[in-house]
Amino acid sequence: MTRRADRLFQIAELLRGRRLTTAQQLADWLSVSPRTVYRDVRDLQLSGVPIEGEAGIGYRLNRAASLPPLTFTAEELAALAAGARMLETWGGARSALAKIASAMPADKRATLDRLAVFAPSFHIDRAFSEKVDALHEAVDGRRIVSFAYRDRLGAQTTRRVWPLGLVYWGGRWTIGAWCELREDFRTFDIARMNAVAVHAPFPDEAGKRLADYLRKANAPVR
Figure 1: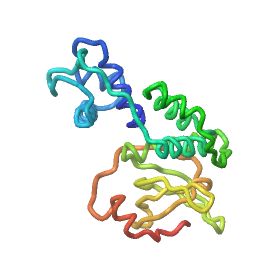
Figure 2: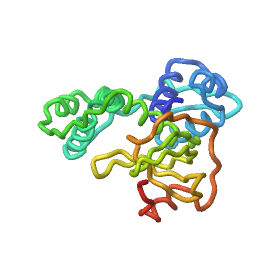
Figure 3: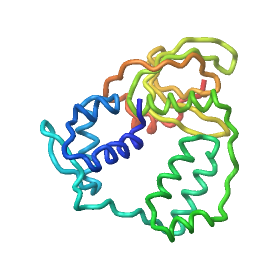
Figure 4: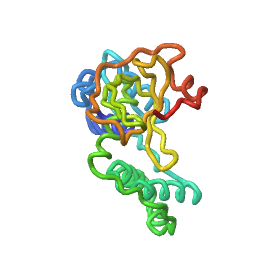
């Protein structure tokens, strides 16, 4: 599944230079549903991307318009650089910063290259990085995740959860979720998760949303 930020970028690129593209064509190219395309196009239009057309007919990017260059303050550039360098071992962080840089005016791009802002690099092995990426996509796509889990005492269980968000704290990556087995919110240490598999989407149920998880805040790490 394509990450939403990448998907939005790809939609704009796919529409660039084409006469008319249907939502079904975009859905087929991106391996998502037409409904997802409708939502993404609407969000792009609301953010100022000059997409013309409507659902059921097709879309195109207005050739007379151009996407405005990204502009950032010095403080914002420093924050971007520090964040990307903190996670530079992950391809996603590097490619995201490269995309941002390519959309900047030349003077701002030069400023970004010169920034003497550094952050500790978290050296994450490839297998762990791929596991976090899969979980991130499950959160983004609201899809059920199953996995084998080993708790702090070494006990093994099999879990099916509704993933709500990834959190880095206390020197470790965790995932907050609604656990079907415990029928409650839980926070899982990703390093202790194995055989991760992504399944069908989970429903949007009151009391089991990210906001509910955050309000609880003390969902224990098992």
